[in-house]
Length: 123
Image 1 (cartoon, rainbow, N blue to C red):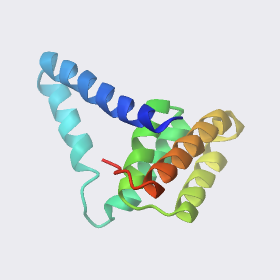
Image 2: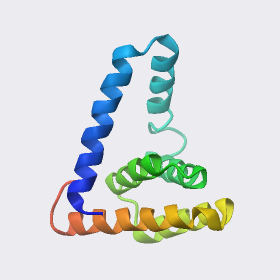
Image 3: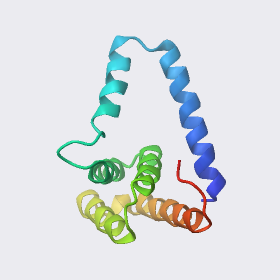
């Protein structure tokens, strides 16, 4: 996945969220607010919460969610070893059907690492 694809994903996600909020009523807005709040620093650090979100997303086979959490994990400075362990848990829980999503996740991770080594920002 080329680095510019990460930027395209972020831009498209923001665009689509703006459209959702244009039509959203109370229930949708509350869900979005809750989704944002559960990832804030608390008893568990943000880094751990992002890895948990990634594992759940991979098990549920939501590629958009996987990509989002991969980006957030990079922003939270998850190490290669931490990433591999988290994705191993997702593979064990989700089974072999998650392998295509695992491949894409590692592709995204590799791209994010290349971008970081070239001095690019993660945000």
